[in-house]
Length: 241
Image 1: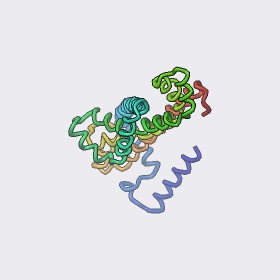
Image 2: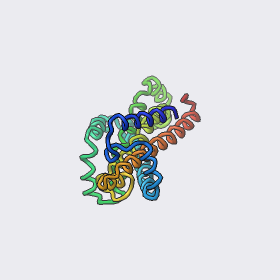
Image 3: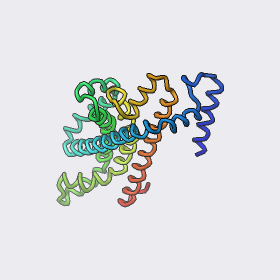
Image 4: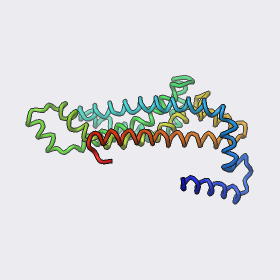
């Protein structure tokens, strides 16, 4: 709370120091008023962006886990896909958004695709690195005792990589709202991203800031929920959090 209060004070001080008009830099009080005055627009937009974020995060995390398991099970596949994971994160997402809109049209599909593209790579990379970090002597001992390669991966490598998987999921939870908003900027008619664009066209900067604060709050809430769930899951597995 102290950090939030300090940020608001610095924000207001910046408004006073620069003397910028409200349509360029509204103060915290004006943004708070916009939050209340436009709650009828913000509430359904938040619901749509939140739904795209949650569904896209689930799909991206599932795809990342599946890809990491395949890469660990087939090392040649892992060596082939490892550079592709890096390339997928080096491409600017803004360059992909218009293409996804052209292919998938308007609506929920391009937003989900954008969230999946942003979130699957951190999950896949983190889990794959964690599974590769399993001590070789441990795997050799299990195979000497008759365990198959699949059993070693499933019962030794995967459980041991859960902390790394949790780190990837935490990153994905932070990135997911960003992907949904970018998808709405490029091809969405509804949601917080679309609301920000409409507010910008009408020079309602206070509403733009209000929508931005809602996006930040959504990201923080999602990250907190995911982090709490991961901590509980890891404790049940005997890991220290």
